[in-house]
Image 1 (cartoon, rainbow, N blue to C red):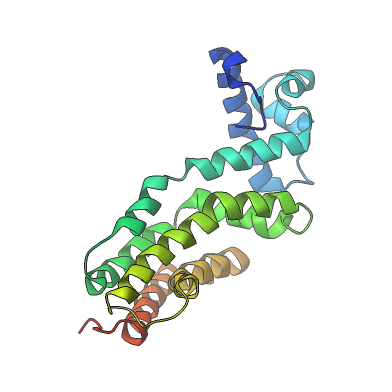
Image 2: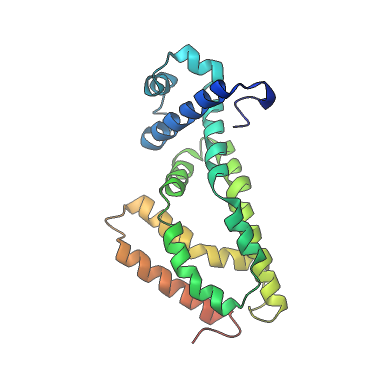
Length: 214
């Protein structure tokens, strides 16, 4: 919540709790109505306080929106990303495990909602895209690039730019999440999601691993 108060030492527990309640209510409203469709009046009503009270915590709607995005991105556990970068086992074993992990990943509602906001509000609010890219996308790609670069050095993964390889491995998850956001979950059923993920990572393993899974 860096945008809330630059001097966190001066923030009382009660004030911090209030700021968190505003963020929670604002998140629901921004996801449902978008940035333009959400007003500070809406946020105040959802929290159950007056609008001036909300302005005491956030000077304007953009400051609130920025704080909300920062908190949501920081909510995603960085230890999971670090575990990818630190993985030392065989790549064949990793690619056997990836599909199930990705099936969980693509169904994380908060992440889906965040990408939906990026798609709808990003062109008008470049700071939103920049915040997400720095806090999540670049961090996760870097972890995959570290892992894959090490696998290339061991001769387990076809040699290429590690960041390109990272994007190849992230591609199926990004593709299916965006497709579900654009067309709806009914158009892209769970059965299709699971089959696509299984086949996509089997194809990557076959193409890129020097010792593909049987």
